[in-house]
Image 1 (cartoon, helix red, strand yellow):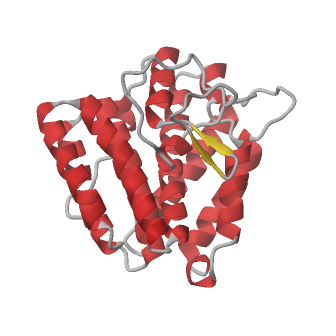
Image 2 (cartoon, one colour; image 1 turned 45 degrees about the vertical axis):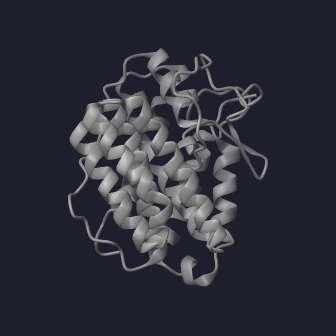
Image 3 (tube, one colour; image 1 turned 90 degrees about the vertical axis):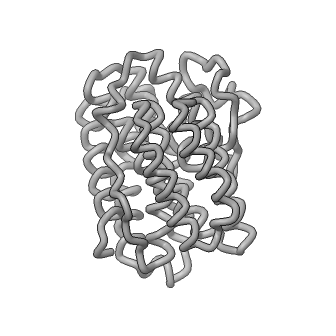
Length: 269
């Protein structure tokens, strides 16, 4: 069975960051820490990053996007949820780049966005631990806290009967993770690296969830754009019959995801 990927950033559960990962992520043989969501198997972030490291030496500092200090909170809850997902995903990249200042800014941004979604209580201890861990350059603990932040935010949103916003957090994280992965793979293309983008089941899952959004969210142009983007990416990474994902497809996936991330980070949406 083929691999799924960076939804790990999107629907993360905690896992020991020191665990020895498989050479490839095979959904038929995932550890117990992996998450099953509506029959979609989701690997944890540490697995994906460690697999990428085994495939080469990604230059994460080149992929990292600087976080805007004191960034404004979007007016719409759906936009805020998407942005929170991208910020948490950026945190994983900043940890890989071992960039202390970026990790600390991300910790503060997570707190601010979580407050706007009324889940600041569930996030505060993790955000403080992220900042403290970055100061100590304790990257293993920071990555663990990012895992825990995503898990607790999603659980809190579900408890507040805001499952749709929880799903948008997941999708935002997946988009930023996919953009980063496409950039890493494109910079030094390998078939194994490109194969990490093969995730048709996950894309179908996201498309179903976006289609089922209530009108108050689905009517937001940004959410509509995200749904269209998911549909654009699907044929590029959903190859069947053993066909390899091409360098051109990897580049196109990165372009689409990057366009959506730019829209999510825009103040005008």
